[in-house]
Length: 186
Image (tube, rainbow, N blue to C red; front, top):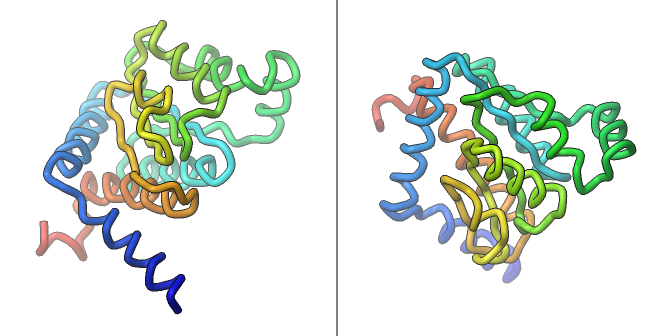
């Protein structure tokens, strides 16, 4: 009981976004709407649970908001690129092969320190690809320093960080489509 009380109070605290965080979410919404208008796409990546979040977000954004979003969670692509270029470079290579001028890159990483994610962020910076990051655990993580728009969850618990990332990303989808059950409150 004590564990759960603490656990859920952590969520409650982290979900009380301040005005600055709300403004960043609204900025992300406007950025994605502009991307749609310009007929560009989002490339989104993560590892493990963050990869699942990337998949969920990309499907919902494409299907519901009609904004092209792709994730690269296919085992054949990952193993091919990891085999040929090293696991630490597979995301960078996927970006190199699949991104086009004007696309946006979203990297989701609880720690912000995974080598393949850091290499992808550095590649995006060199190629001037707009980078949006979702991180947690350590405020001074490398990809947060590189991103153009950064979302940080101040928790050391991976599941909590990942859950908050998913809530943030899916809230943007609902903002864009104006989800009817929320309209009276928007």
